[in-house]
Structure formats: C-alpha cells, structure tokens
Length: 266
Image (cartoon, rainbow, N blue to C red; front, top):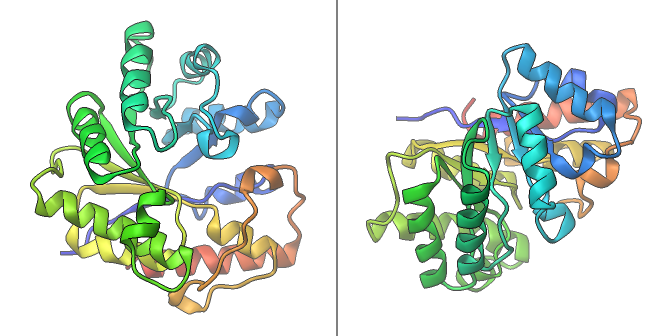
C-alpha cells in the first residue's frame, strides 16, 4: 500500500513565503543563517506557525560540516523539529566518531537527532547505518555516494546515482539490516523518478528534500510531466539563495513541484 513521503524543496529567500504552499515541511541550511537574517527568521516564524523544520549542517554545500559549536548554538536558538548531526562525507567511521562526540558534548539539544549514513564501501556504509540505527532518532541517506556510481545501472552518473540508492536500500532490506522502526530521510536527488520506487516498498521512508524542481524552474526548465528530467542543472540552490524569482520562474517552479508530487503518487 502506498504511503506519503513528505517533501521539501529548498527555495530562494524571495519565495520562501510561497514555498509553504508546495513544501510539507521547511528545510534550513545552517550556513546561510550567518549572512541572511531574514532567512533565519523565516524558519523561526515557520516553527511558531506549527510547521516542522529540518536543520541541515550544510555539508553538501560546504564540503565539510558547519562548525559544530556554532551549529549547536543555532540548534539551541532555533529549536528545530529535527537536525542532522555533523557528519563526514563518505567516511563512515569518521561520521560515527563525529556523531558520538557531538552528542557527548551537546546531550540535551532540542529536536530529534538525524544520523547521516556515510561510507565508500558496502561494509563501511552498513557499519555506519547500524550505528545510526542504534543511536540516532532518524536516519538519512544521501543521493550521490561514489559507491552508487559503481553499483548503480544507467548510462549517466545521474542514472547510476538514482538506481544506486535504490539498490543500496534494497540490499539493506534483503540483508536484514534495514531498521523498520526508525523514520528515514533521503537527502537530495539526482533524478526525481527515483522516489516512486519507495512509495509502495518502504513505508518508513518518511521524508526527502531536493531543490531539483526549483533550480530547474529558475533555469527555465519544466519537468516532462510526471517523468521529471533526464538531466538536471548542476547549480546548488544555496548559490541562488538571493535570486529574485520572476513570475515566469515561479510558474515553472509550481509546475515542477506539482509534477514531483505526482511522481511520488501524491
């Protein structure tokens, strides 16, 4: 039976208020708080309205997790619904150490702790997953591991990332590793079509985030109906955070986000 995957599409500051209409919850990138007070205030207001906010440590944008002490300070101040504990890109054992150290240092921060799975090999990814299964409240899995390029099928890297994450999750299930009692979050996406796979098969994938429909809309690219895109703009939404979205771009974004929901049977 199909279940609902909650979606958030990161958006420029100029349309954050409009994004409430197409986002199920609000997704905050912590490194943008320091420069953009109005960006931070949006999420503060969002929580006051009773919406859920997920605070990301910005590792995808920065290459390394945001400074732990400053991150903890923002978690304390914002009081997000969930936050991604600082991790280390493609380093499972480094991520376990980072998670352990952060929780020891900041044991009583508000919100649920999301543990990101990292690693370069299946065994390393599994070890990291098992740790997060035991100690995190919520488990996150990224879209762009180099592991997927080897294990995924497809002619392009985007295809292999898409198929690779599907295969990885299915392998965890087949091997009895997947924790059916914990909610899971899918970080980012290569191709939107990937998510339809989980709707009927993996009911505890609770949420995902992707700026794909928004960046494409700004670039004048519309989804091919509920097939999504076969390619994607390479620009990160964080680099467009100050972009003043025009009316025609907003129409593209609304169309694309509607199609994304159709892709996940919404």
